[in-house]
Image 1 (spheres, rainbow, N blue to C red):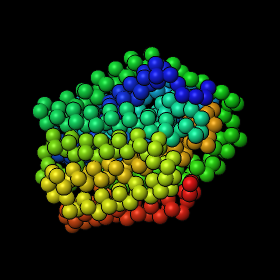
Image 2: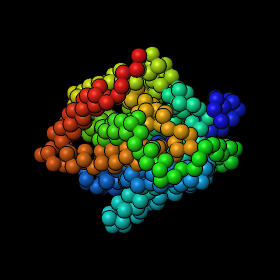
Image 3: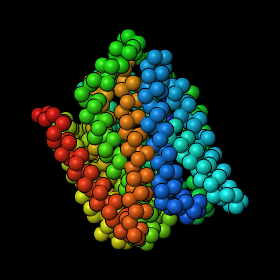
Image 4: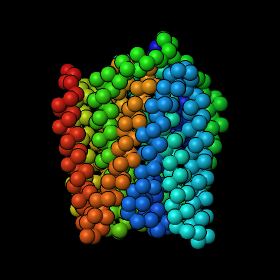
Length: 403
């Protein structure tokens, strides 16, 4: 089943990927501020609710990936993801109704926690979705294929965040949750047109799973991907919106523009990273450049006051992000046979789910531990900048030169 799939067969998958991520990204640009302001959650609880998205990604991807390889089916697990997204969006709408009705805050926080966790269940099924798409590609085609895959993935996030922020500003947050719900329903219907692609070769066994775990590329890609998620969810996907609003003085609609300013360069660079830059300069050089740019952005955030300095810093982070994400994923699965890629993707996503979960929790703890919010956020940015430089050092140490 090697070789590039036809455009006719590829388009429904890419369209479904667009709706898949759209359904999860109409609200992250304002979600942390929504939780702290609308739901009146303190910093640590805000971190827990935001991080619940990552908790499901710690515990579900490995069993989902193994089940997908054992059953040789990908599509049913993707369908499960869309169903979980529908429940997540409905749960967030319910959370807003509970907050308006004056029920105890604990109940509202628990409802938000569960709803955000269900969104993480959706993200956990990305294991099956990405393998469904990459099933037709050989090892040397994986990096370019992943770069193409990330265009609808991140392009959908740009559109979703921009529309979601505008709806939240002009209508209310519930409208953004409703838009996500509509996208999830549309994606569920579209999946009827997407064919399943059973892998060839032997079924996954305990022995072959151990071979997957011992793969060096999977280990290195997973380590770097996990540490990078810690940085992302401690900053740009965690508390950057709080900094932008409370310190830099941005409005809710401007938070949407802020998200676009990292997602747009992220999408462009993700398309170039695996398809053009890595083949020319090597994984090691491109990853190193990405971590250097992200680290620089983290050190610049405390000095970004106002819309344009924030947008410039976001764009810098987005360029680095686009260089990093396709290559950590490609490192993890490029040497894995097709029939075992579900398990490999499960390991990759489950471990980086630790970063998604812990990132905002640790950031919330750092912020609350300092005397003022300004001091706490500043220290958090510097800590994540230092972690980015650690990732740069690990890249130079662990990723082999390819020229």
